[in-house]
Image 1 (cartoon, rainbow, N blue to C red):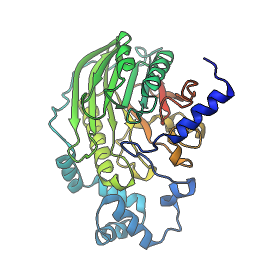
Image 2 (tube, rainbow, N blue to C red):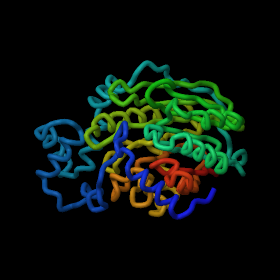
Image 3 (cartoon, rainbow, N blue to C red):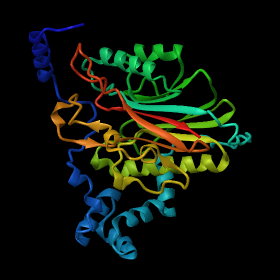
Length: 362
């Protein structure tokens, strides 16, 4: 549908008058030099003490006890903190809700010959259901893009009950599993009809004030054992301790699954809200899809207010909030961003996040 210049200006004027408030603010306004400040070798010891204390929600005396043991290397100090047994115990108590352990399936390990021509595509997207503006139109756009991209597996975050019909209609193509439908917002995993589902599990993060969960789907594709872990970690800078604890718990779960299911394909991702300095203790053999695909700056930022003006109050921020990690016999990956087309009828994008889409192959 085409619009005259006057109509476009009128629509834009209405958008400008709409409330800029969101039910949950998932932003941090940082320019690029600020994003890399933890890597700045000129940071003073006092600044490192302060930063460590803020990130870990500890005091500076505790920070000093760790930093001085690692020659005041902040990244190493964070690795020590989040990898300590004491923290692991505290994290499990604070983060984990009722959940059954992932038992070993005893499935046969596929050979390189078996995997010739085998590809799996995984897409992850925070669809911003908390922003009620043009929601039905945006959800229709999301569904349209999903159909066009046609991923084998889809992780969604910030799904809401309102105007959910376009997402629910994707069940003609996918099996859909919601985390805690009926909550203010939640996650979903959609899998191709070729995916044989064996188990769906949801772990509620007890340290979350934002309804956050870890959603786990276990099954197989073409005889290959697959585990899918979708999450939306705690948002904003002031909730770093909760987010880091949740991320560490998720990585422990990934490590547990890999140990109990050798040869399985494991995907973990979603809107992780991570800053680079918060990534710690990733298990051996687990890779970041964007990094493995070549770390192309053109596909780096998934929350980019320079290019996406859905959140007009935050122009000038760009972050790599959405990430996808994997482990298993597929060792190559292609990585793209989706959802970057503006919707003409409402002059906005489907979401304030770009979708990440990765294709894995041997």
